[in-house]
Length: 295
Image (tube, rainbow, N blue to C red; front, side, top):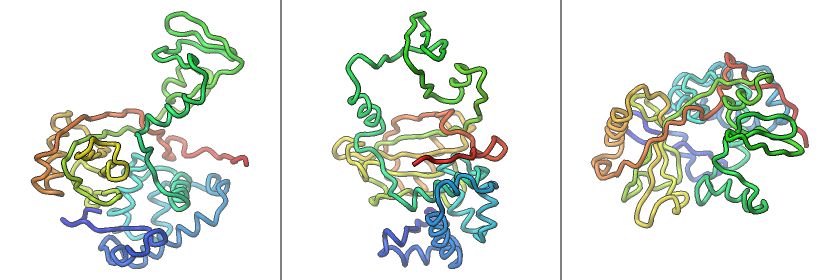
């Protein structure tokens, strides 16, 4: 956590007991806040997932205040942490989703695929017969037993699964009510000779100033994310009304403020503007639908 010109360590004491003292004394909230974090962990793990996803919902910011967390830890920790997860720095996301995500983090480790996200579809494709995947073939129209492609070709099947973003799903299924409110994000990538953070951790902007919400170095976790002798630095920006050139300039200036002159040697690689990155799950957009999870 970057706060007041310094980095502070916040760790899960259950998984990393050796980091408990730095976490306890980090100036990012009261001692009671840290006890409440542990209590919340126990509460969400003690509840059935069905109950978590069907409980009365309020905005996450309200849920945190109602739980007793101080304004200090909400602003310096929860806002950048949960804001980065939901792409929602105002923390208007439903408290159901907040408790669900908190439960998932408490249950298991956050991971990244060893060879990048592309390894997931490649692994799925490897299980299928050859020649059964059609790329660059946009669907123009569909019905229960098939689809018509943009070039006019028709393909027939026993069932059609629509697995795409809500915007295109609403276009393909005009009679079906589909929520199309989405949240966007910008991700900037740099190549660095040395990792600015040598540990496997997420760096949060606890001050709320500047464009950066959070930063990580994926190649510290999985070396294959960068060539030998190099590291990949990933920067997440939630609000970016600036042009790309101005955004790169402001991000680099903030990185220099955090890590010093070494940042001048980093090579800017690319910016991805992911306009429809996540569904908007605020109460205003409909919150999180009540569900029952099958076994």
